Image 1 (cartoon, one colour):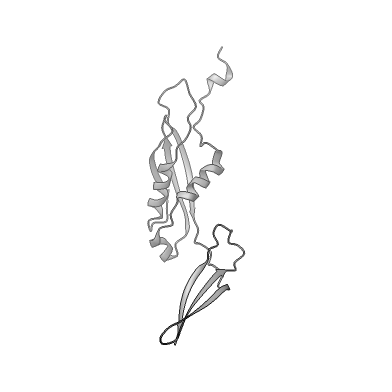
Image 2 (cartoon, rainbow, N blue to C red):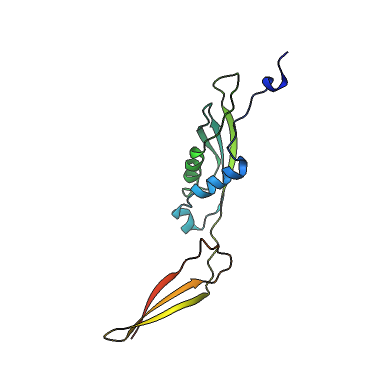
Length: 154
């Protein structure tokens, strides 16, 4: 009699689990400008096949948003690579489904903190270079950056 572990097909899986897969999607998904400008958000539902080498093939749209979100979701799903454990049966394919969510970015805080003001004399007035930093506490340190604006007062 075969051992129990040999009787079942071992499924393809994403290395690192579902959390790692969604992190990969988040890092590679680009919100289409057309959808962003139209204020379009929602979910794209896809089905796809993982072949015996762990590559994604045959991506099909179940329901989508249009406005290039569908194409972007399909593009990112095709980038996924799965690990396929050895099975006694060759040329196995695995059918999977996924939902990819498009959420509009949250607006950045309107308040700013003035870091430095430098007045540079000009022939008709002064050119002030003001370095500011957003004071929104929801921005993480790696997302915070200084902005430099030139303001000419005549």
